[in-house]
Image (tube, rainbow, N blue to C red; front, side):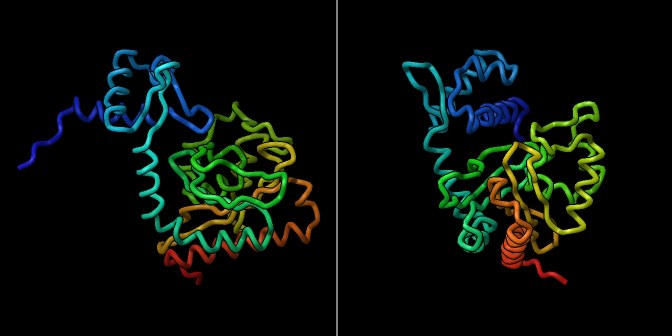
Length: 263
């Protein structure tokens, strides 16, 4: 009979994962001291963890700067995840067609706890582009269309547990950011009523986006398809309606591929 893992190996494994999660799009390389400060771990512990990760190809060190960065094993696992991901596969053709239909960038995101993570995208052919990097992570409650889509159909108590305290609002710098927690929650109700979400300069000036829900065979919202554009390209109501319809059509096609059928 296999022995149950002891507490120490499990704790070490969790800490290794914590180390890997400190690397981000905006901070792709870090020193051991920076990782130690972020995690509140002793520098000696962080160096031991980094050494183990480096031996197995998950991080690499720069001998000149002393900084660490993710290495080839992360890339290999990312390729495996994409190849075996039913959602990304199901979304591929609809995202291509949506980009061609509206001539704007298209993004696919999922929720990870209180955050959204962008997992795929199609770039716009326009000179000035609006998009989020694949792998970038943002709070689901910061006003993005994707975040509102991912929160709108969750139980109220679950959403309530994710949101910042009332005194922390507004939480985004955009000129049209929700002024209060209550305003944001009321906005989620509007998302449910019309079936899609809009970010109209809530996260940043001059940024507009529409997001539509992707559902699995149980009807649960598992992803969001978004079309982010410069605000000046989403002023006329006919264009806004076109972008919303196109995003909804693409989301429905992806949902159908995942086994969801609208009643």
